[in-house]
Image (cartoon, rainbow, N blue to C red; front, side):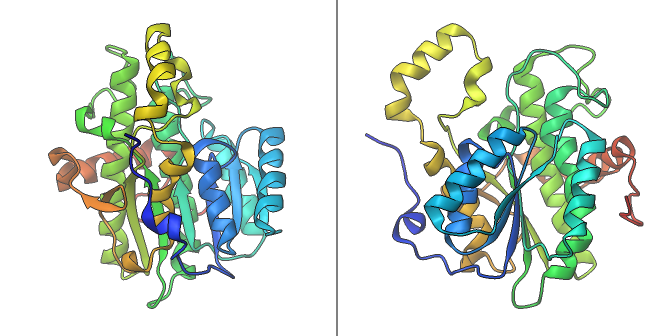
Length: 309
């Protein structure tokens, strides 16, 4: 029997988003592509942040054609490069437009041991630190764009893999022992901890911003290209039955981005458009704070002060 498909997405009950602006990382393919397409269909101005210019421009062309929304564009952003992230933010700021929704969607999974441009283990550096820096650099714009009646929203895509993740604060780069599965799970757990701490911070300063984390489920995307051949065979044979399509996988991200039910609601974990309990350790306030502080050091931003480039 085919798995779940988002009812609200199917029936088109989401409100129009004319005048609102969104950024979706990894929006040129997979879950991100369908997230962009549905937000554009609702009238939103959507910016795809990605590291492949030709792929990104092709996605823009197709989405404009399908949605008849000309306010879809691509800006280069390599989440494995702190320099590229800062350049992206500069380009975005130069547009002098607001930002109502940030969807931290991009990621890699089960890649062999390798480092980002800045020397970070790739899962941790791209999946987590890249989005940590991007969100912090865009946070002031999000705060300025949110209002008491319509909060700006940060949506971060994690995974059920976070339930088996272990955060090694003394070895976040997996130098002592590298396991693709362990490194991926750690990056996804870090994203949940980051989301909850971000919500604590914006609540504390009275900002009209909410931060939530979503679990798209088991989705048939290119993320599985690094699994072993035996797993690829099993996936090929069973995907039609057990895997969601990328469009189905995008539905919870879309729900988190625009649903009126989540207006003013932050710090929650969503799966199949439902609030769900994340792993127990993710609610550890001290662990959230320690990860945040360490992440600020690694990305060279102030823990409490200016977010200037």
